[in-house]
Image (cartoon, rainbow over all chains, first blue to last red; front, side):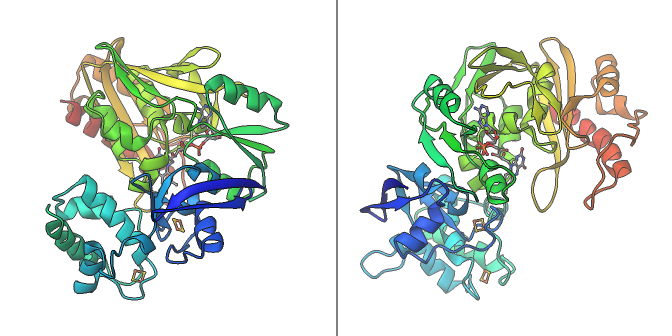
Length: 155
Length: 260
Ligand SMILES: Cc1cc2nc3c(=O)[nH]c(=O)nc-3n(C[C@H](O)[C@H](O)[C@H](O)COP(=O)(O)OP(=O)(O)OC[C@H]3O[C@@H](n4cnc5c(N)ncnc54)[C@H](O)[C@@H]3O)c2cc1C
Ligand code: FES
Ligand code: FES
């Protein structure tokens, strides 16, 4: 076992992990932050996407020890003072989710995409969300949600 | 995944020392291939040495060539103004945004997946791979299915890509994985026309027939009569050998058209 320390949603945390412990396991099992989902566990679906030092990454394809010293943000870290993040609000407003399983990863990827492309067109949104699979919505309302959030956050 | 001892390396020498001290160690770059491999228990290393703190990332352009550190991510290459448009487009087309945020040039080159994109770019530009032991020409590096010229414990430090007069990469991505069904990198490189093909066989390789036709006439039409026999071409549920052989010429034409 080794000790890992990182900042998660603004809080300093640490824990004992094995070499093979995945970041997503550390978040869900050590920290009880179960908003980050595991869909495929094979790096395909994006349900596990979190931000590590500001970039979106698949937390099922990263070791907890690789995040030692990093700033991690999960879906639980987005709402501020009881107000949803504009991207979360946009998903609700546009019916961008049905079962909600893909939604945490989808929202985390979408926030990164708008941060890097403040005024994304539809093709850019679809391309940049290639790593996130949704079995319910057919993606149209997700694209609309991202467009609304991009406008709301000054794109 | 079997358990292993995790180490962070603070330099290439430190990584080499930690590997040498391990019973059966391996380096880890972005982990976008190695972690899935470990999960499937296809590998069982005693020790994993993480290179992210080893000072191997960064891009320098000296006017004649661009040198990219092994730990530079696909996203960093795709977003760099020091890198040619052709090379940026290779990096931009890899996997998805999250894979590009972690996957690295060195990991992709060392892994030598038969459908990986970077090997075609290295061959197409006549790049040089610099390791902690020596320099290796791309032409001598990719030796077979997931096989390279790297010795056990040898670590890639950087790759140097000479400038080309014209160059472009055309890829037909597998719609599910985004890996290349077939990808062709075509260039008017420092030492003449180079055409490299990935996705079609067990490992990226140069296309002598395509190079001969394009050396005589740099235009998509020059490839009209060229056919690639399907003998050694990959076939799977995504495409037959004949289909991929046909794609090689189509992608080569698109690459030349895009290069201008
Ligand atoms: C969903 C998904 C889609 C993908 N799509 C594509 C695609 O379209 N095209 C494509 O080309 N690739 C694709 N990839 C692979 C991706 O490019 C990986 O990043 C790459 O193959 C490996 O790089 P890495 O940095 O993650 O290396 P790792 O997984 O960390 O390492 C891979 C191998 O290389 C060795 N290694 C790593 N760095 C070094 C070094 N500096 N010196 C010596 N050995 C080293 C490791 O020991 C290991 O054996 C995809 C991956 C995923 C998960
Ligand atoms: S659970 Fe990580 S990509 Fe599917
Ligand atoms: S809302 Fe059900 S998977 Fe996306």
